[in-house]
Amino acid sequence: MAETINIARMAELLSGDIFEKFKWKRCGTTNKNWICNKQLEHGALSHPSDLVMAYEEPYKLIRTYVNFDLKSYAKGTITQEKISKALADLGRTMTCIEVSEAWQKFFTDTSVPSEYVGVLFIYNHDGEYDKNFDKLIEKIDHSSLEIPENSKLIILGPNQIKELDNIATDISQMQASKEIPLEPADYWFYYPNLSRTTNIRPTSKLGANLEMLTGPWTTLRFIDSTNPSNHGYVIHYNRSGENKEEFLYLIDYIQHYQILSLGCKISIRLLDPAETALTYFEQAIELYVDERGGDRELRELLKSIKIRPIKRTKAFFSEEAIGMERRS
Image (tube, rainbow, N blue to C red):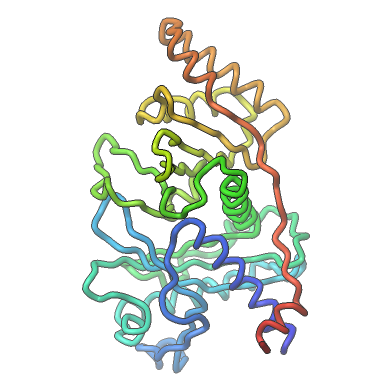
């Protein structure tokens, strides 16, 4: 039993370390049970909330509350059956969250318009899971799930968690090396005005929402409060970069949304690149510039972008150390 508690604590620590770096706010207490509103239907007296965090949405006046179901599994125990059951349980939990006064009281500011997301967080604590998690998820019968009308369910599997952990770690390392400011208030995540949608919080220093974190890249913006001339963007790119078309799309994003400008530092950090990724990036620059008439200034600005693979790390928690922490 103690071993199970310690392994579960690993997932709790890891989720906190990751998402606090993405500027999410922890709400209420962890490992909280609250009364089920549909006890006969759900066959339970209560539901658990392992962790609840929140962030502000950029394109609407909504605060998103994320209810985590934290799972920590060894390689051989990540099965379709186990994930299906956990997802079904989370669906029922989210159905109750929408109408639960107890949950609202514990975790939310009821004066703020809110949306709710349930995240099934599958952490592989031995670091040896090497199967295709997406294929495992595809086999789950989603039609049988109790998915709330006004909520969403998201699964973060072992590989996605590794990617997010590596981004969070890289942000910390860039702060330590003074590539970006150390002060947390001096960096935030960038949401440009889109063709049909406007960032309605242009002066707010927003966190990375789930759409960004589960997309092909995250975009961090920084301005050093002690030296405003030190400003720029850091793009963590989580695709392989195995062809130049990938980078043409990324370059067009950088150009189209006014990220590219004189004196602005831009760094692209590759999470798991193909061996030829840097070559393809250079080729993409030349092709992009040629398609726009060989603009010399554009070429120089694009050539000034720094691109490099990050140092990948593996999160590791000692069960013994966590057990001692719980007793302290």
